[in-house]
Image (tube, rainbow, N blue to C red; front, side, top):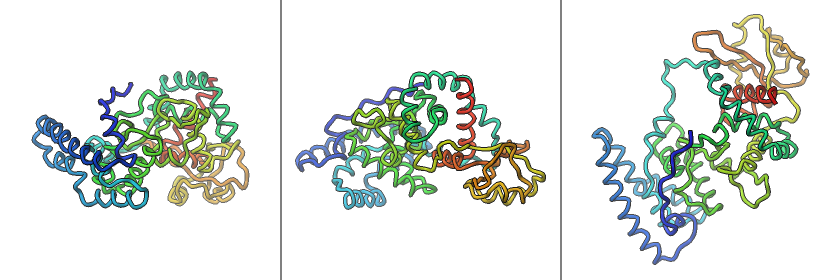
Length: 367
């Protein structure tokens, strides 16, 4: 489904303050206006909240006053030249996202992952049909990206399909809200999200964006390919050469940026992604599973564990054993090559990488 319409944007004077230097008189007027407006809206929000949410409401109202936020602001001022009063005024308008906190929570220990169930979610008729349409409509840019970065069109198409169904579901969370919430109220990955918040403010300033207007996923990912702000700054490209990078509405830039990301993370042009495998004793696979998904074993070394490939494999190609649990059923096992590992840098999940590969293979076979 399409995202909900965005909330009305703040006035131009308000939305630009974190991104440029402003006269002191303007800052003083701005601070007064900001202090009054959020107080009124917060009172309305509190009136609508259930009685069980006073703690969250108190946290939401106080980001600008929290010591760890002020420390972050001081770092942004010292390292990147932001203006302290502008950042504090911005944080005074940030709303804590309890939905992001809930969606980031780990699965319960009793949950049993199933590759087959996961696969069915992403190899569905809608993604296949729309993937073929997207490929046909964007063939020029997909071919250009393949020439420039060495990544096949079907892999790029599959990633955008898995991520957002070709732009249909890009997220309706205010990116500033979720990154601030996760940076300061989600200890499990606070360092990562604090870094992404820093990258988002830099990206917004560089692109002259309204920091409150950009919407994305519950984790702060943006646009058709769901790039985090740090990835936008490091890997996004202007594939169509129009002078700017737009991942939210420009398929050409989204295509080029996905291919650029994979190339920078070790994609090897012309090499396989994974191999079907055979094994003689499942009990002997544990050391290979424990070694992780980074390719490090040759097919000769794997043979010492009773593992072989059903397809020809170069003797010097590094491989990893990929195990995909199926709930109470038997796991699915594959041999992952460097290109499989490159896909997991986009989303660090073997389920994700295998779904991308399976969708890509399906799309290519139906072209």
